[in-house]
Amino acid sequence: MSEDKQRLHLVIGGELKDVGPQAHEFKDLDAIDFVGAYPNYAEAKKAWRNAAQRTVDNAHMRYFIIHAHKLLDPAEDGKAGTREGSSS
Image 1 (spheres, rainbow, N blue to C red):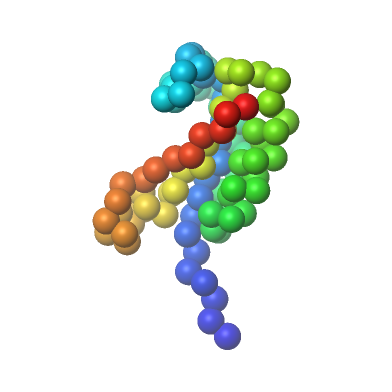
Image 2: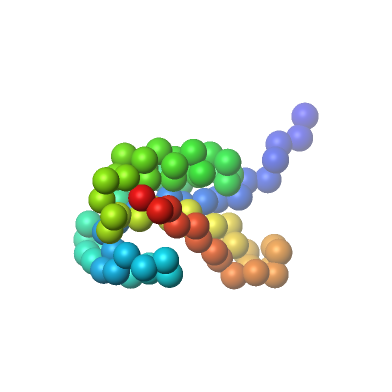
């Protein structure tokens, strides 16, 4: 039985300085919510969705999925790390 290769994903969030569609600068880095580290995108997306849903009433709050496996091994697919944001 072969196991799928682990592809580390991090889920973080916090209040942003601006609420525009391309906003990604946090208001207070000390207040970042580290949701967790996940072995694959599917698990990270579940955690991201749950965190975003909990803060849906705060327009300044955003959660992101960081593709840490791409940062650790950029040659894996030829791309730099990416993120995904929520529209709380």
